[in-house]
Image: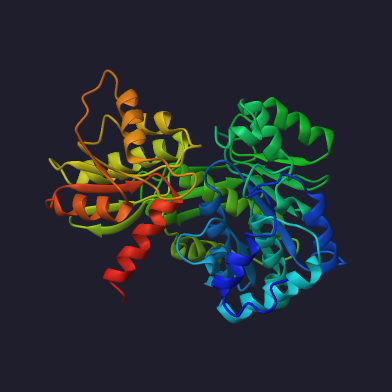
Length: 436
């Protein structure tokens, strides 16, 4: 066992050795450890958040509203961009090394000889950290699917399904019906399941009915509307109306669905906690999230996004169409991209192929990483029938980013996307260059 590990880095290296497989979709082992860790069950309300895209935004907005309302919350997300600690956030602050090492030791004692995966260990760390901190609400992002993800050992007091799209098809199925069924697995009997899909798949509706869950669907049970000036928006449900809300992360589009889901979750928790209109507005206004349409510089415009599947890249394309074309008339759109082998590479690249003038493609130096040449071959397929700008290949993200940045003029826009690996490398690089 790893009790002699003295740093977070040593613990992280250690927990990657505990199971032969990175992913093992089964709840038996992690539930066994959880029951040792919390024999009386979780001592906090649980909001479980599943979906193909939008989980990070929804959990951040909900966490920020809780903080603005004086409700102590914990937020568990994955993966991280730079530091493992980012996965565990309490009242808006990532946990420190000392608290995390204490949690590692607590989980290790509870684990005994049970082999658990890296992701399962992370979930158990979150439970240990949030229990020790005595949070009132734990906001838990589901890593893969829902039904068999480690987070599902917790019984959700509120379940949220943000979106349904193709991703992780090797594990979740080849159809949207199969994927929707897997994600619906986080719902519980007699509790609300909030759905950010206006027309939920039949498999999801059927499962929720079979288990006697209470579906609340955007567009039917709650919805949003954008103001005439596109700078403020409104939320309305059967029991609550909110006007003059700030744009979440300064964006419209899908973020209004994510923010609406967060507000509807607040409604679900109102019987246990007190929230008011002013607190909700304040929470949305200060919510922030690295790596999601993150504007890193204005002149020239530099945007960083973890978008790595067709749906998320399509939303990134919409953001760029507005933010670049309206403020940088006449400039080029330059892209730095790296992707993993198991993603929808061609479909994702097709979302941007008509907008990008120059491509800088980089190898991701990880086991699942795609080589720059292979990425280029996929780009050629994606661009069939369209004019493809210049394409340059690099051995790593840093080289691609630095070279692309040197080509920019004031009216250009640089977008960096394709993977959490890509976003993490750029965040580390820019923090090094700008340590303040």
